[in-house]
Every structure is written in C-alpha cells, then in structure tokens.
Image 1 (cartoon, helix red, strand yellow):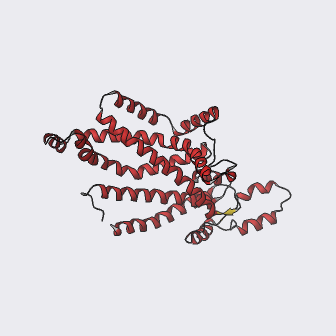
Image 2 (tube, rainbow, N blue to C red):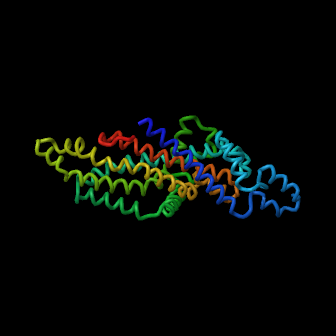
Image 3 (cartoon, one colour):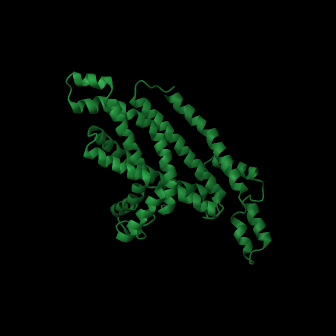
Length: 321
C-alpha cells in the first residue's frame, strides 16, 4: 500500500512539470504583458518600462523565464504577483483554501444527500419517492451551472436572504469569533448549493441504479431465503456491494467539482483559485496562472489517489500494489 502511494506521488512530479511547462508556453504566446497598458501613459518613459520588464525577467525568452519560475517553485516560491503587489505563494495558498473549502462543502452536501436519496428511491422503486428523486435528478442534471449560479444570484438579490459575493461581510472585524464563523457559513451556503446540485443528481441516480442491480443478485436472494429481515438484507449485504462502484467516482467527482468551482467562483464572486486564475489571465500575470493550474492538477491527482484507496479499503477483493 505504501509503495503504491509513493509511486503515485512520484508520478505527480513529471506530470506537474509538464502541465506547468505547457501552461507557461501558452501564456508566452499571448500578445503583450502586464506593462503593455503602461505604454499608453506618456509620463512613463520607454527606459523605465524596459527596466521594469528586465526586473521581472520579461525581456528574456519564455524558456529562460520558465527556468527561473521552476527553480523557485521547487521551494514553493511562485514569484511575485506584479498585478496584485503581493507574493504569489501567499496569494495562491489563500485562494486555494477558499476553493478547497467550497469544494469540500459541496462534496459533503452532494454525497451526504445523494446516497440516502438514492437508497430511498431504490427501496421505494416506482413509488412517489422514486418519482420525486427522479425529478430532482432531472432538474439537477438539466440546468447548467452558469444558469443555476445566475438564478441563485437573482434569488439572493431579490430576497436578501443570502449575501452576494465574498467569503465574509465587510464588518467582520467587529464580530466575535462565533459571529465570524456564522457569517462565513452564511456566505458559503449559496455557492455550495449551486456547485453540489449537478453532482448530487448524478450520484443519486448512480446509487439507485447500483442498489437495484445488487438487490437482484443471487446472494441477496439467498440472504432473504435464510429469513433475514429486509432492512438487514439491504443495509448489511446489498448496500456495501452497491456503493463500491461509487467510490471509483470520487476522483471524477472531485475533478468535476473543481472545474465547476471555477465557473461558480467567477459568476458568484467567490474569491477562490478559479476567480484568481481568470483575474490573472486578464491582467497578464503568468506566474499566478501557472501556479493556479499546477495546484488544480495536484488536487485532481490527489483526489484520484484517495478514490483508489477508498475502493481498496471498502472491497477486500481489491488490492493496490
């Protein structure tokens, strides 16, 4: 097991280098840089601009700048964000925490609601509960995240029940610790619900389908023939086998939530990694863009690793080597 984890983490190194190299190359192919807008200011001389570009290594070829960036990134130093006037590492980890908080909250909500609903729909097959869950799944899968985020913003603006944008209120420094926590949770509710909606629908449908297939299996028939209670047959025998395929979806679920978080963050003004990436693209801040993409890639790989470990823990027939 430990050999498997170490090998997967070692594979992560060349993957991150390749992703960062490709991202840096694509950023270098875009016209202009952060100082291009300053060229329109007559008060700034070309000599001054040349000095600023030289200080930021923008006067050198892209592969030389990438070498500087990679050497610093190996020490978790992603350079200096010219656009934000802050160290890039400080800004990245601050926004990374917000993205992880949003994604983890969405995972807890999606899986915590979808699994019980999927089980309920399978047990009450063709009943009103099953039809209600099917309607929820249909709505969740049909509405795009962009549209759902816009509808959520309209709802928040018209009712005033939820804040629009940000992770905390402007007067948070006047609050007690308990009030700050409640305020953060209040800001988190709406983005989490939007991000979890489509994932919840997909997991619920998969759970229902898996459990229905398992309930038709021969070992379930044998358990019923032995006189076991229906609840014991479902929750002790069928459910564990039905839930195993869902664990393989965890990595894909994390990937989907991270990509969805980029959309939700930009539409709902949540200050996470996705919003930072878009802002940095607009401001021509390549160090931030490359570091953001590398961090997102690392999260996806770690998510897939966790899915493999969960599957091996849940199913004794599976062994990772």
